[in-house]
Image (tube, rainbow, N blue to C red; front, side):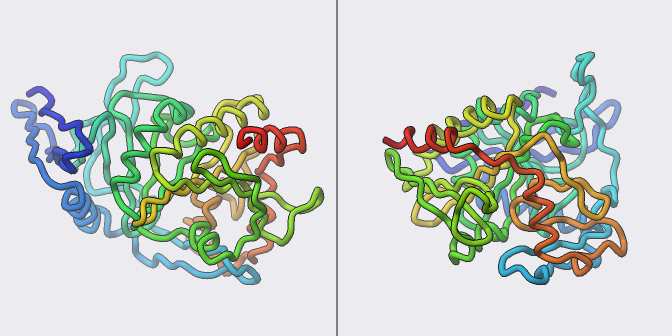
Length: 339
C-alpha cells in the first residue's frame, strides 16, 4: 500500500497518526488517523511505556556534588533493545546504504507533520523521549537547512518539552534528528532561575543575546559555555540561530560543530542555547558525552558507573574541554550583528 495522506497545515493543529504494523509478507498494512497533536503525542508516550519500559529500570537522576545546576542521569538498562526487530530502510546509497532512522516496517506509531515525523526514541533519554526526523534522509549536519520548519514544529509541541540537537560529526546516527524530552533540562532551569551567570551581548530585531558563563563574571581567562538567544516570537528565532550556526561553522572550519538546546514558553517566548564545539569529543566514565550532557545532564549507562562518582567541577571541566572559545574578533562580529 502507498503512503497515507499527510496534513501539512500547522494552523489546523491536526496531523495524521500512523499505526505502523509489522509487515507480513503478503499484507504490508499501514493505517492513518487524524488526531490533535497533543493527543497524538500522548499516545506516543503511552506506546513507549509499554514497548520500552525496561529501559527505565533503576533510572535515577541526581544532583552533582558541588554544582548548583548540573544533574546526572543513571540509566543502566538504556541500551536494552525493544521487543521487536527494527528493519532498516535500504537507501540504495553506497555511502550510507542502511539507515535506522528512515521509515521502516516496525510496528510503532509515528506522527507525520509537514516534512517531519515524530517518533519514539528506541533508546530513551528519560520517561518521555521522542525524535523529530525529516521524512527524506538528510545528514545530521544539515540542521541549518531545516531550522525554520523544525523550530515551528518544536514550538507547536508546547512548553513542556525541551529539545536538543547534536551537530558534532561522528554521532551514532547520521540521519538528521532532534531529541525531545518532556522535562525541564538543567540548563533551561538554571537560566530561568539565574543560576548561570550571563553577560548581555546586545539585542537584535526582537531577539536578545547573552553570553553564558557557569562560574561567575566574564573575562578573558574565565570559562565560556555558550550563547543564549531569547526571542519574543518563535518565528523570529530561526534567522538568528541560522546566522550563529553559519558563523560557528566558518570560525571552526567544520560543518555543524555545535550543540543546540531549545524550549518555548506558554507566552510564546522562544529560547535557544548554542554551545560551540571544538573537534574534541570529551569522554567521562568511558562514554562519549552526548548533547544531553551539554544540556546539563550527562548520562551514565554502564552498571556501577553512577553520577555520584563524579563532582560537578569534574563534569563541567570535561564539558568545557570540548567547547571552542570564541575570540574577541568573533564576539565583535556577533555584537555587530545586532547593531
